[in-house]
Structure formats: C-alpha cells, structure tokens
Length: 482
Image (cartoon, rainbow, N blue to C red; front, side, top):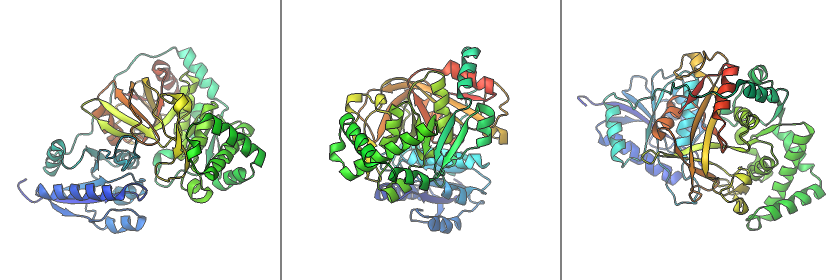
C-alpha cells in the first residue's frame, strides 16, 4: 500500500453462541487488519444488540477504503441492513471456521451468518464479498492484504450451464398435484430472517398453493388444550420410539408431546401439506420447550416441516416431494473445507428419523443453544444427495444470477447442487451431513453469499434434478446449478 488505507471493521454476533470465542476471533481479525498497515476504525466490542448496532452505525463511512463486517458468530440480518443498507459499495463479510470438538454444538455459526447477511443485502440492492477462514491462516492474510490494496475477493460468476431436462408431462403432473394444497405458517418470520419472508400472491399464481397463517398465541392455545390422555399417548409413543429421551427433563418431554399432538391435530384438521413454524424465541422462552423433535415427528408422518417459518423452504420441499424425492430436510451451510471439496450442512435437530445415518440410533437431546428439550442429535444419511432452493430472483432487480433456461420473469429462481453425503460422526450437535460436492465447493459457498441466496437449502437423497429443471422451465423460473 502506498498510503494509509482507512478500514471500518465492525464485528457482529449473538449472545446464544460462544461469545468468548467470537470475541477472541474478532479481536484477532481487527489486529490483523492493523498489522497489515491499515488505519482501523469501528467499535472494539461485539455488536450484540440493536443499541450496539445504532452506535456502530456512526462508524460506517462510505468514503473509507474498505468496510469489513466480521461475522464473529451468527446474527440475524437486521444489523447488516441497519449498517450497510444504504452504503452503496461492497461490504467484505469475514466468516470464520468452526471451532469445538466433534459432537459439540456450533460455537459460532459464522459462515451461516455471512450467508444470511449476503441474502439480505443483495436482495436490498447491495453487494457483498466473502473472506472465509481464521486470522492466522496464510490464505486469509494474503486475501485481506489484496483487499486493502483494492482487490476484493471475487464474486464468482454464477453457473450458466444447461443440463438434462426430464419429461415435461411428468413435471406437469407433479405441479398439478401441488395446486389446491395449503402450507401452515405458524407465527411470523423471525426478526431479520429475510429468506423466511414470502409473497402469498406469487405462490398462488405460480403453484396454486395457499398459506394458512396461524398466530403464535393460537398455536400455544392449541398446545395447552391438548387433553391429558392425548399427551400421555404421544409421550408413551415417543418414549418408546426414540432413544435418549430418558435423559431429558420429563416435563420438557411431556411439553414436547403436547406440541407434537397439537401440530399433528391442526395439520389434519386444516388439511395442511406442510408446516412452517416460528420455532423461537417464543417456544423456548414462553412455552418452555423447543419444537425441533415435534417437527421431526410430523416429518416422519410424511408432512414436510420447516423451522424458522420458512415458507419458500416449504414450497421447495413440497415440489421435491411431488417429483418423487421422498423425505427431505431444511439445512444451513455452516462449514467449508475447500481443499476436500466438502461443505457441512446442519440444522438444530428437526430431521425425520428416517434420514438418520442409523435410524435405530436417532438420539434425542436438548437444543444445542437453548439447552431445552427436545431436539434430535444424530448424523444424517449417507449417499448421493441433491440440494435445492426456491428463492427471490434478484436478477429481476438487476442482480447477477447467471440464470439459464428462460428470461426469469416470475420473481423466483431455483438453486440446485449435488454431491455425496459422506460417512462421518455427527460433527455438530443437531443433525449434520458432510457433503462432498460434485462442483467446486469454494465457488459454491462464495456464490451462495455473494449471489444473495438464502442460508436455508433443502437436502434430498433422491436425484430428481432432471424433473426439477423441467418443472422450473414450465414455471418460467431460472435455474442456477453448480
């Protein structure tokens, strides 16, 4: 650098993760920027609250040479929108690798946080770049030095290849089976979870799908109204079916049984084909239970379920199901080993037990962050897998999607990837799959973030990609496939 480079560094995090580890890595990141010769501004403490974000906004300077958001741990996207929504230039999102022993909880979930930030900012018209790795890594040091010289990590060109299409008649039949179905949406989208917002009119026009909105208070009333006999029946059934429940507080298991019974009843009474639930904060804070394993129970009954009230995730799962994919699971991309071509896909523990690597040992535990029952804690099935996701088409607003197959005028686009789920111990508490992608794993992860894709994708173990592409063509939805 020929002159002092001015850099704004802001580190965001959430208290439900390991704050001490987030602080240590954020401090090391800030020190590396300074060590490379930059003049660093920005709060030295983690941004954890809305008040913290307001104070940090005073440091954001569009004339600075570089703006870096250190995703010290996962955070919802509200801080990103508050800090950078009107910046008018790319933000460098720095995500860390996951520390902790195999089987421990996700300490940081940093990469997923960067993914969520990317979705929110790109959807609102902004640009992001991704720096992935820990401050001590040579590659991180090199990439950061280049960024300080004005060469940001590239935003990969999204794939433009067009692959085999399945039978159009079969795809049309699958789409016809969706028409008239209803998704149950319990509660609102969690604050700052932009991928969990949806357009009901668009779903009706494209798929003929309706959404039955159920308030949290109404859902809780239904839980409280579950009869003692129905609760006992489900308590006995789940205790017999699922290992590990004996180690969990019996009161929490009984509340779990009531939640399962209530969700099962409302699904039957309202003829819901999928159930998307605002699973936090009210369930653990007000009801004293996490609904993860209740969603798993419904999934084992054949009703696709989605945490964090992800309605577009529900649509993706229903489409895959109609095309013959069977039972699927909504996952985050939480870790990357680019050299091995492996991404780790995870969520808190709501997978159907039939998706376990060993269904007979689909252990149940407490939620990894909330420490309240009940959530699954088992590795996911091995073998060939497909990842898919319907989401907003940012190309319609002038973004770069690299879409193929049509002009993409519907307002949605479709992400597809594929790979192999490898035999591995359950890396993170909840449900994890180590997936070696068929394509470039590094480019995929960078594309997720810089391309503004959701942090949620749907994982399937039956390859329906040709039919999925054909269905997208019939709906005039552009396909982006790694």
